[in-house]
Length: 220
Picture 1 (cartoon, rainbow, N blue to C red):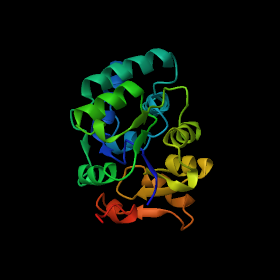
Picture 2 (cartoon, helix red, strand yellow; picture 1 turned 30 degrees about the horizontal axis):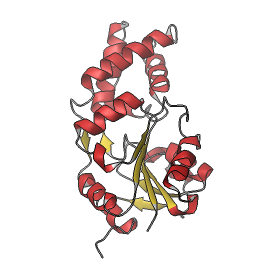
Picture 3 (spheres, one colour; picture 1 turned 180 degrees about the horizontal axis):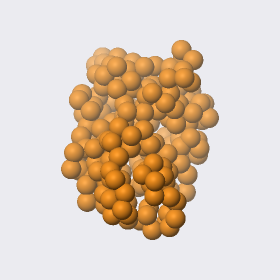
């Protein structure tokens, strides 16, 4: 069993597609554009809010002018919708309960720290995690491995004894850059981005309950 489990957030622990898409579309409409399909916006998620805003505006034909203001407005709009539809994936709460009783847990996400903390609190899972690192911290954004390396050091363990649990190519690249093991969830909305980079050495979960077996979280 690993000595540290590090979880991505969007697409791994939570299905946040609707709230992210609704917030991006609200920004687009405010700027005179037409809303985009939820799946189109979902495909833009994973590298932080700034990238999402840029991609959404360009896809809506609105250009890249005044991106700083657009990002600030998106974060306001998302703040109002953060927990409107976002939910833990089925079985995730049980996995976290089992894992937290056996090994330290952390969240490493490109979502802003404030939204991450609010979301985890709102879904009543924040106590499961010893450390939470968002994408606007000094550790940068994945796939930069700085945040993951910091968590390994904080836990007093090694990369070989750490598993990064995620859903996307970004998580896969982060784990590889830090030298950790990796487990990807096929049900996450970012999994399609990782498929072309798989080598066959990764752990793969078809549902949250599979993590109990893959991560050796069964009761003794």
